[in-house]
Length: 196
Image 1 (cartoon, helix red, strand yellow):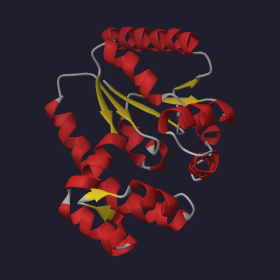
Image 2 (cartoon, rainbow, N blue to C red; image 1 turned 180 degrees about the horizontal axis):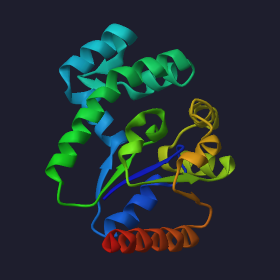
Image 3 (cartoon, helix red, strand yellow; image 1 turned 120 degrees about the vertical axis):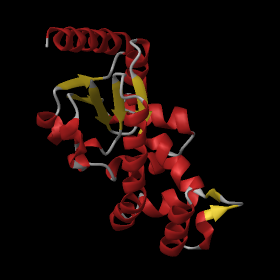
Image 4 (tube, rainbow, N blue to C red; image 1 turned 90 degrees about the vertical axis):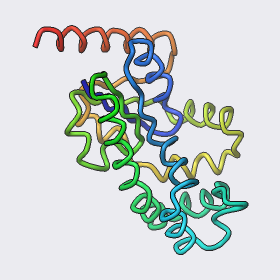
């Protein structure tokens, strides 16, 4: 079974994924893999330096602050970096699926609905939460300034417009309630799969 999980920054995707992990789903974290690719794939590095300049890397490691300041204030640059990195992410994800072909899997990505890949999933789950809660979570988690967080949120799609594309929508305000709803979803989809 293939599950897609999406939502904005600070919405709680990783928390929901951790519950799926408890049910032995293998989790593919596209953000984490994108970071690995940005730091390890030489072709991607060359493309990034060509597009964003020599300051893109310090001691062979992505200069996250420098890149973030550029892409989260310029949507064209954000689109450019996505076009460099995400074909590699999809290739990596396909390898992950081959390795885990006998397992239930989760694909976690903020960009799930930006590409047609989501149509290959058995179910897609959208996680949202009020913006003020997202901002609090991101500031606490990533130690960022309010303006930086606001820029990141503004650079994302309006997830509420994507609700129709999701099989399930979880509004993650209270962790215990989110956990209860997620467990209910997991148990229902496992039951439905067993009945096939």
